[in-house]
Image 1 (cartoon, rainbow, N blue to C red):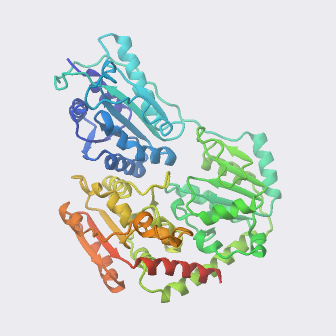
Image 2 (cartoon, rainbow, N blue to C red; image 1 turned 90 degrees about the vertical axis):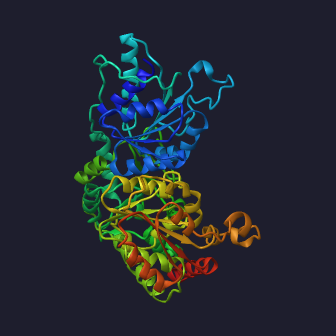
Length: 561
């Protein structure tokens, strides 16, 4: 009987807790599809485009925190997984990437759909494994089982991330019969551990912490974590401590400083001095705000402690001031710190909170008279999000506009901020929507939407997915950031100006469709779109590109004044 290693692979996946497998059709992986589909406990999702399929699996992993498997055929098919694998690697999301392959003797021998697949994801993968077809030898079967068990465990430990299994599949491909039960194989498990800083080191850190009058805890991208909110709230009760959160941190409290770009715009040397931290502690993933990166690199805090259990990305010196890496998880460290922290009299937190209050008042004043443009559209969208939902912010302008609105603080937010590419945003949101009962609203720019249009070519596109596409005729981010708007190449080569619409795509793929060209139409469309629950919907919002860029520049001038 042929390809029994595929049957054992599927059975081990189930025993290790994998439930969801996103497959793309192909010949070399067809035996694995057939085997997996006949194993109780595995649910398969078929998506033709491998790039979209990988991001779809990424969204599933985002929603559940559990390992999701991918399966594709041989040759260049697997290369299309690379963008999502890179995102999973840097966002620390668990994917088991399975690529079918020719037997080793056929590599570089002119056979079709054959490339060098071993270690094809080097530098963006936690670990790669080359599997093999075993005989009846019990030692071979045990070895195979151990490799697969380690691969699956590696997707979660020591931190989550993508792992690659390259699996040779020999012809005849479709000689698939019922196989006898495998002999009992031993599958090693991973023991749960608790990482802590040694008492001696923690005492030294606590002394420095308690002696400081200015401590800033900056939190980047994180999944929702109510326990972390409580821990940070406890520390933020100290007048010398500021907890600064990005919208993607999924943290909210009246004692936290959010809307970072709005708050720090227009700082002068005098205010900088009052807001300058002596100790900087960073938690979580990527930081969106370029303004806070620039400010902290300029300030150069005396001490920067970065908390991360990821031994691969060890010394992350984003602000060029790193003094200490703490290789533990954030909740564990904060528990230790809170237990030794003493309340300190200081105006540091009060200075930051007063500035946030003033800037948010200016934010509200500006938006009351702002014309219909990108920022006005985002205000209307954010004010009408469904109560029970998840917001997926696309890269480029959506995630940056999300930084400006206090209304988003505390609303569950996801985003592909591991590598910050525009590819795969709608596909990822679709994967999230597939495994949750809430409404998932994804906001994407037009270039990102069209780039990922194969996300709509998906029989598993769930009805709770709401797609909002801001169509300003190109990559409008390049009209906002300093530099590109001064060159004649902006339109044809950088901004990629276009006159495309999403209506035909929506209709062709069977989505509901709405369009808004001004504020009244947008208000009406936002009310309507949440009543469409029979299938996914696309709301296309047409905004003026040049005006939108100018309004955003005027916004920051007003905030800074």
